[in-house]
Image (cartoon, rainbow, N blue to C red; front, side, top):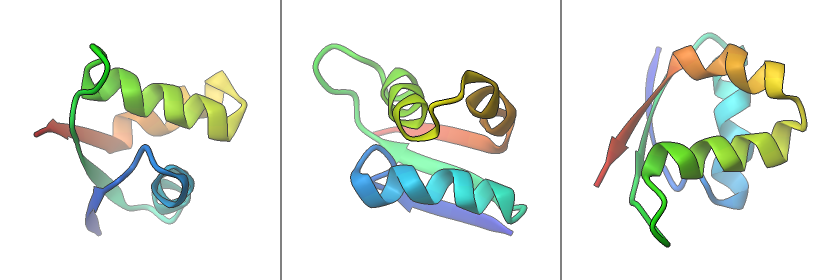
Length: 69
């Protein structure tokens, strides 16, 4: 299943991303750059804070596509 998610760096979105990937979804996140950080960096930082496990973030990253907009 493919999922388009907005707000992936927010509270709910950052918790949803890992759960959706665990369920076998390919997740596309629509994010905007902010504070001189690109969208990919913002998402990675958010996931690292939620997962508290670098290996887990690396494991789910291939299942996530980030669209900057």
